[in-house]
Length: 353
Image (cartoon, rainbow, N blue to C red; front, side, top):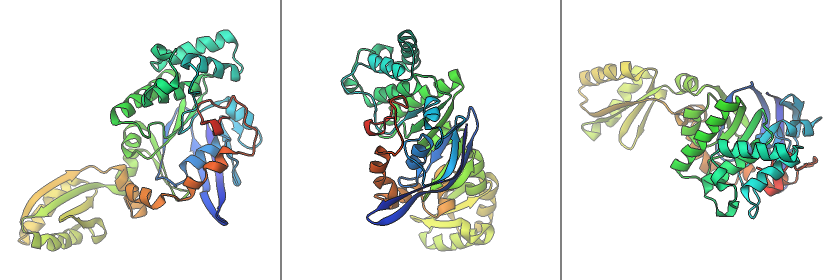
């Protein structure tokens, strides 16, 4: 469904060349739900804009839904849906009318467009909102309308660029419920960007991690966590003066590179916490170190990111503020290729294809 080789995008920012995406290689098979994970500025949105023909690559090749993004961009757009970060629905148009108009843009007849609009509104629980204008809707309702606009022509592949950013946890869960329902009913391929680690962990069957424009990990969340992060044991010494000794002991048992001291607690990355904790407690007792508290935890994708980059995703977010991805919006809004209205009304007005 998606096959990219060496996709690269450079921008000139204040006379300096910035490589936002560096040699992206990516293969996504039909029916997969893939989360593209990384901090702001990592290259997520730039990659999506290239794959959806909203932004031409500086170099590299890709086919999307069986069509070449450079040689046949119209063919790509006819076969994909794209939901951008900003709402693409007209503020003063009724939701039902907006969906029907989007159907016309994709070449549907009046009857087909109305039937399809009714179908996607029912699927996304938008039927009661058909006569409402987006300006009167909640954030979650608007996102569901954006998704409906991207689905009106029933594409086999749907791109979603941070579909739940800015929503409260309850609304995010509701949007995800609808996304998963779409996949179950239509068997479509979903490729989405997010920086919400828990979403990627629990919802996606495959996670691709990007940082500084390069893919640094690719696999199921379970495999990435098992291979790269491991379980975590956290303990505190009864006497704070013994913290350094406890850390040194843990380092001798499991390796110094797996041990860290944070806020007075000793944290140890281990393959299996259920086996490691009793062993560590036994060794510490033998050395006269009394343990006040001890707990175990399964790894998270943030642990994976930390293991790969030496920093947490939150630290990377702060580091990437104002970096290349924050400067590319103007370029993305003025792509050099033709952008017929049929590509997706779910994109922001400047990106509407």
